[in-house]
Amino acid sequence: MDLLALHNSPEAVAAKTLALHQAVLQGSGQIREGNFTRISNDDLARLFHLYDHHFFNGWLGKAVTEKAQGPLLFRLSRTMTRAGGKTIKTRRLTANGTWATHYEIAVASRMLFMTFNDVQRPVEVCGLICHDRLQALQRIMEHEIIHLVELLAWNTSSLSSRGSDWWAGSTASTTGPPSWSRARTAPGTRMGKPTASITCRCRG
Ligand SMILES: [Zn+2]
Image (cartoon, rainbow, N blue to C red; front, side, top):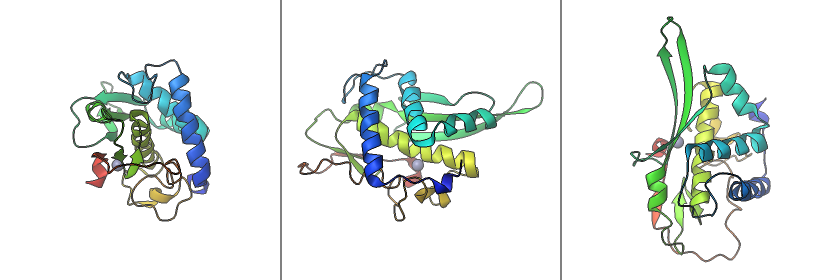
């Protein structure tokens, strides 16, 4: 797949991510409402695979299979408090002397559950306004997917690298996944100031 040729208009991104929001709620996992109160590692995997299917035609999963010695791992972390998510690549020496590579996406569950207790007040995640906990989770996953792609394709995980504007056709995004959600906020929606902000560690 030519990642640099991928392009999704802001309208297409908004439509697809909204559809994924609905798909998660209608799926078989523990997330049954926007401000869900339970979540499992399997829910993270399910969400990731929805994105992989709808935005990458399954390329992400295949690339992990080719480059790693095991499936992509998902982890909910109650102890992560400085970042909403984290994507890591690890290399370990195996008993037979070969190196094994693994990729993992971790999401800070405690941070998610500390927000959206007051649904009137939106929360900013990766620079984008979210209206419920599932939207926040989506923004975190989208951001971590960019890190994963960078690791898989360019063996780096820095949004200052070439990867920052390839996905959705944006040319100027420095605050979040490109054009993910400029069209995402419902027109006419009145919102107060965000009461909380969740970012990735890469944003300091
Ligand atoms: Zn980041």
